[in-house]
Image (cartoon, rainbow, N blue to C red):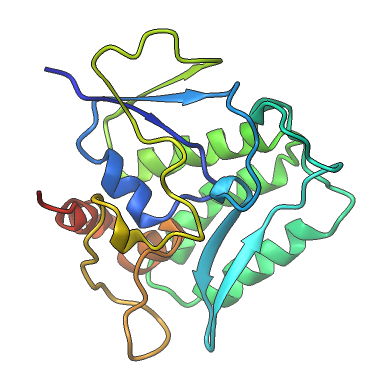
Length: 208
């Protein structure tokens, strides 16, 4: 029986996100979902030498409750350079940085106007690099929920991952610090562990 999930579309998703969909055959992404403040839709976390840094994509306007597909990136702000410098500073010396970074650099250089389109492109690349054979479908709304597991809106920055049933951290090599920092952006895992990223994620799936 196929396992189908309705999931959010974060910006460079964290490890909990991939642990949640690791055993899925298909994921549904709903472009008609309404924008929620304080979500992962426009933010991710990376590890710098002396702190955990949140990278946020600036959004145009006052951001009323409109569909995610209508959210526009504020490209007048210099966020792109900030993110590129941050990622290079955090992972430039990581073992697999030079191998994986060009995939993401192409996305950044595309100068997307739609945050939905940017995130969709990022997720597509991440699934490919991780070797996750999951089918990805974009729908406007969920018409038929039969046989569907809906986890949209569950993973929020304000709610620790320990309170949910998806991710149990498995430590891996990180560049900075003595203590392992769990649930960072998937960039952290890819740049530091490369081809073993998938097996680490599969071991991180919380057992019930």
